[in-house]
Image (tube, rainbow over all chains, first blue to last red; front, side):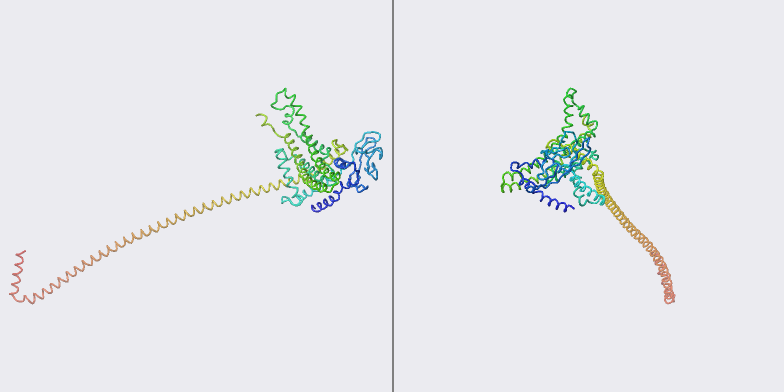
Length: 342
Length: 164
């Protein structure tokens, strides 16, 4: 199964690797680096390649909910020029239009909720499918083999599960780690697989999107604060060992601290992944800026090197996000009884 | 779409997707996998423990065997020692008995010899006496047939008496 997956990924890589090259070959000379930001940001359509004037794109569903019209489903191709694939106010459809910077607006200015399956949402579904099929096939292995040594997907999954359990959850949380283990495992694998799949050519920058990292950080914030024990809240509002007048300063700082923790989680993952993508694409962009074979060779070498670094970063960021989540949870559920009375 | 402004649609989908993933994987993957891992670790631990117990038992058994062997050796030595003692004693006793019997036999023999000797001496005495008498008789009959001879003898006897 793994071999088939590898073959497929190599084949798709070969096709998608042409993406930036052809995109630039067909694009206008004044914007040789525009594809970088276009790749980093979310989009209403999934653009793979451009051959001359032919755009190879996957139109994605645009879903809009408004209180008066209810749920409406469109295709992203409804909102763009059928030939140049450019969005704009001129291509308004059913009272909505997408502008050049890919913002969805209603023509009459009425409010609505944008539930579109954008490039990143589609990418997230891909990640979910890969994760669920991988993890469930590993789980079925345990059902079949029982306590025997793991085989196949389980053999790949097990060391990582054991690592998350022993090195992250148990070390950071302590004896109460079991309750939080499913959350931490899901978090680790989602970020890790999301990072890795994001590195594949033509893929979307899912884990480098602030909305995704924010959602994950907010989930960690909710898990931490709904499981905070008496000691945790006492530490925030009645910091032990601090004189009362100083509490006026300490308590606001502690309250701000509650929010800076998930904020740091959100920014760290977003920045690490986005920066990696930008650097790789920047080296590719050098080829189009200098239009030189020599630069092409150097860039290719650098991009290969950076991709290897990014593989490392993908794993480290998944580890760090999970570790810090576990540490915040550990701080919320830890028993401080012994420390406070000394 | 913006770089640092989170899109509402993506947040909603991400929330739904991640929570669904969390629910699905927790129920169908993480719990069975973690349970299987725990079970395996427990069985390994149990196996190690029972191996340890078996090893201890083996050691105990070996010590017990050695103790029994040692005791058996001591017992054997004791028995051997006793047997030698016993044999010595028997020999000693036998010797003593033999000596005693020998002594008794010797005594008896001596007695018998003494008795026999006495009897023999008596017999010899009687025989000698008889023979002497016979000789004397014959001599007397021959020599002292004359009166003169008889007279000379008597005189000699008388002489002897005077000397005594």
